[in-house]
Image 1 (spheres, helix red, strand yellow):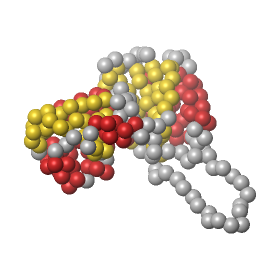
Image 2: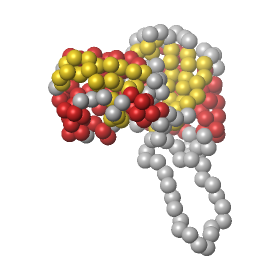
Image 3: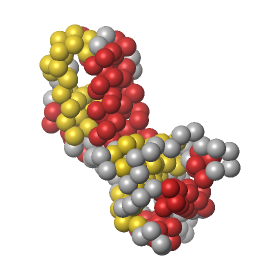
Image 4: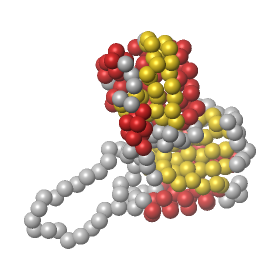
Length: 243
């Protein structure tokens, strides 16, 4: 869990710095981020929206919750007016903010990749993840996205290479780390990243101290259904997750 403290005046310059700090921490895939607002003396409404922007980015990847706590009455009112509570966990104190973040922790697996067999290793990790979490449906899009991300890393960047697969409430998220510092630009038509962009709901890249991480979020697969004989009494009920 990462803790960030904001002090003084929350103006646009400070908000830009806050977002940059938050994005840097997102690349480390923490269990959550909490922001202490107790020492904010004044703020601009436009600057406050950066908190929701950071929370939105964190939801796309790595699927964590951003919480804020100990905001003064005026700042709390501004957060409510902006509808930031839909994205942020707004809490009275640090303990409640941390609890809200940890409550959204989801299954994640990691795997180091070999430069010669990395694509095969990645495919095996996805298959194992689907089986372990009892996920169903066609893995075709996930396998293709993973193959493109891993292939790009192996072809264009130095190692070490590492991959993660994460399941959130809405998404299946995959990420590949490498030792290259050049972040990818807009995908060229027909390129591997163009394929990722077409198949994924969202994708992006974050700089890390020793390279970068390129990630993609896909719709969460359905859990494996438990089949059984129909009962004469009772009501049929279905449940699922919003994609």
